[in-house]
Every structure is written in structure tokens, then in C-alpha cells.
Length: 573
Ligand code: ADP
Image (cartoon, rainbow, N blue to C red; front, side, top):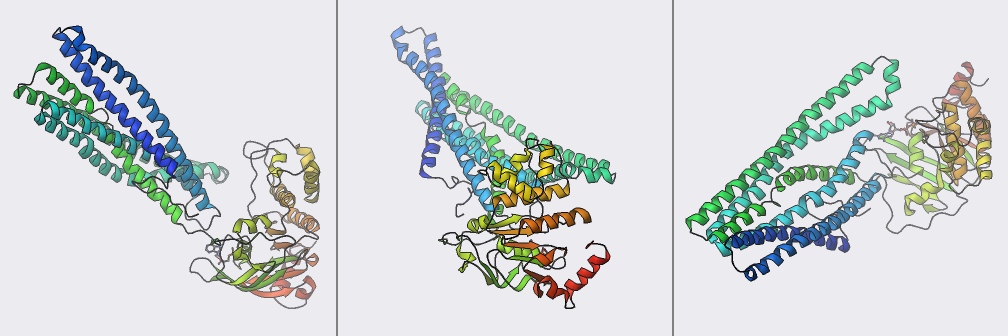
């Protein structure tokens, strides 16, 4: 994760091959523009000289030149498009990959999903634009401009000065102006676009809640407002583009007229004047789009800044320089005096110790905010350790690559996801090579077999398919976890948000299915915990109580109180 994102004005962390391709594209683009100028200059010479009716032999070189320039211009343009897009798409792919790496594992991110998505798509496109729409045209315009001024200088130095001045106005002043104006606009447009994306995401994902509370009209109106604000800003931005292009054409016209007047004042011959005028006219062709490029450049700079911001989000955990070989199962996990802190708040875990030997099942209970999820995050290496230690098979967890740790200690996340795919594929996600037998066994252990048979293994689930109830979703996630078969199974509040009866059945089945597996179960339901080997009660990040179900019931404290209140609400029935 040491690669850097492209910064303004530099090639995006390119390999040597990429720089060669970029140079090739710039060369081909410039050659195409130069051929264009040469074509017009030689054609102008040919037509005006032909009007003087010289012997045909005097024109033959110009005839060949016109043909040659016309053909090569097309060939060079094709080469430029090919090489330019190739290099831009490669750079874009590289940027996207580095961005994914910066986001995984996701630490606490301050960006909302929709905003992040729009950044991913729009801002990585900006990298392509930087090369194709800004850098390559600027190089081609510069070379063509210089060539046209040199040709003009041979014919009439004064006219060359006029042309150079006109080209500078159209190629430097105007783009700088549009870039400055666009920077002001894009500073307003980017948040407006992010706001619209977030509003639309709220409308889509929160549709059910909005309908339930009759708030759809209000939310829709807010979305429409955001849309109107964005549209207004974008119209303003489009006006900059139009003004830039218009002023460029004006500069072109004035320059050509002034060049012709200068030539007449210097009593230049007809042929030379025609060549001069047309060369001046056509030399603006690659320069005019620079006003739009300037406008785009401002947007690209802002996009690159936003991408760097995401990249600058420090990784959730530091990776070792040379990781230890992955731990071999069976795993023994020792947590010793673990202290974990989110930001500069109170430690979320403050001196927690526990040991998971192969086959041992430990339950973590405690009030909300006690640090239960933080403990799972520390084990899965999505938050870093402040002090204390986690050792896997006697090696400090920080010496392993975090991916190796996550591949062996994982399980049920708090918010499992159903993909828009068949029942079979939703399960196979966790075991692409699993046989039908493995699949059937996992589904049976998660007590999902009846449901799977009734629904059909090839029925599509998810957003556009069949929806899945909360209990089935947890069982699907459990079957997935069993199929993945991690060395240490982590289960985060599997019965959260389920009704009492469903939760009770799920917990009973889950405790059955995990028998003999090394398991860490975070739960707020105590029923069935007599089956686990150890129960650790966390309060305020510290271990308040620990022991077996029977031992904890024998002493006053959080566990006995919670057991009593569960009994009163019929939770043990
Ligand atoms: P539990 O799972 O027991 O409810 P958590 O581990 O989620 O507890 O939280 C423990 C403490 O850490 C709480 O005070 C919580 O507010 C804080 N916390 C958890 N996650 C984050 C985070 N990503 N950023 C900041 N604080 C966090």
C-alpha cells in the first residue's frame, strides 16, 4: 500500500512502460496536428500558385505534399487515440485499485456510502481526463503553435509576432481564465453532487421507512431541491465553457485579420500571404479546445485532491514489513491485557485477557458500548492494538499479514448481506469449491435445509428476487460461515433484531452447530450459554466477571441480574 495516487501535473505513479505510451500518444497527437497545419499551408500554396498558371512541374512537389499530409494526419490521429486511451485507461485502473486498497480493510470512514461511490466513479474518471483531455491536447497545441510561428517567421517576422500573441491569448490566457472560473464553480458543484447522491441513496434505501412514516413527499422534495441546485450550478459551469470557446474563436479571427493586414502593409506576395493567413487560421485548431481543457483541469485537480484525501486516511491497521507465515490450524488465540482505543476517546477495551484453545467456546456478554464488537474487530484486525497483545499460536498477531488473520478468524458479521443471486450462489460465496455435500451439510447445521428445499436452490434472492426474513438471513449467514469453516468462528450478536421466539430457536441451533468448534460468540441473550466453556462479562471495556454459566449465576452481578430479567420476560421458557 505504498503506491501514491497521481498528483496534479504528474503522471500517475507510472511504470516506465506507461511513460513510453504517454510520450507516444503525445508525439502522435502533435504529429497529427502538425500534419494538419502543413496540409493547409501546402494546400494554400498549391491553390494560390496554381491560380498563377505555372507549368505543372512547378506544382508537383506541393501536390505530393498535400496528399502525404492528408494521409499521415489521419494515421497519426488514429495512433494518438489508440495510445492515449490505452495509457489513460491503464492509469485509471491503477488508481481504482489503489483506492480499493486504501478502503480495505475499512477503518472508521467519515464518508457516506453514496458519496464515496460517486467519488470512486467520477474521480477516477478524472484521472483519465487529466491525460486525454488536458495533458495530451496541451502538448500537441504547444508543438503545433511553435511550428506555425516558425513557418510564419520565415515568411514575415512581424506576422509571426502577431500570430504568437494570438496563440498565447487563446492557448494560455483563456484556459487560465476558464480554469480559475471553473475552480470556483467546482468547489460549489462537488458538494452539491455529493448531496444529491446521498439524498437519492436515502430515498432508495429508506423507501420503506419513508413510506411508513408518511415522509416520502418531504424526502422527495428535498431530493428535487438538491437536483435543482446542482442543475443550476452545472448551467453556470456550461456557460464558462461556451464563453471560453467563443472568446477563442474571436481571438482566432482577430489574429488572422491582423496577420493579413500586417502582410499587406509589408507588401508580401499573394501566395505567401495566403499561406500565412491559412497557416495562422489552422494553427488555432488544436489551441481552441484548451479553453475547455482548462475548465476540465480545474475539476480534475479537485478530484485528485479528493482521491488523495481518501488515500491519506491512515490504514486501520499497520501491516508488517515482512509478514510471518500464516498460522497453521488448529489455532490457539491468547488475548492479553488488550487495550484498544477509537480515536482519542476512552479506551473501548481496557486490559482484556482471554484464551481460546482449539475447540473451546467463549461467550462475550455485556451492556451496549461495553467493547464487545471492538474485541471482535481487534481479532479480525480491523482496529489496531494500543497496548497488550493478541497471540496466535504464540506469535504476535501484528507479525501476520492482516488478510491471513482474517482468513482464519471470521464468521458472522452484525449485518449480513443477501446478494442478488441464487440461494446456492449466496452460500457458495463462502466456499466456491464446496461440493454439494458440503453445501447440504452447512445448510442442515444452520437448520436452513427445509427453507432451502422449499424456496429452491436456484431461486434468486436479494433486491429484485425473493426477500429473506431476519431469522433466515441469520441462518443463511451462519451456513455461509460454517461453509467457510474458519479456524476460529466469530459470531457477532446473531440474534440481534430477531423476535424472542426466532432468536431462541436460532441460538439453540447455533450452539448445536458450533459444538467442537473454536468459537467466540458475542451475545446479549443468555439462554443456552450453559453449553459454552467460558463466559466473559465486559463492562466499560474491562472484564467485570468471568466463569461458567453456573459459576456466574452463583454470584451477584450483571450476569445474574440479566438472567433474572430474561426469566421475567419469559426468555427462558
Ligand atoms: P459493544 O459492541 O459492546 O456495544 P463497542 O465495541 O461497539 O461496544 O463499543 C465500545 C466503545 O467504543 C463505545 O463507547 C463506542 O461508542 C466506541 N466505539 C466503537 N466503535 C467506534 C468507532 N468506530 N469509532 C469511535 N468509537 C467507537
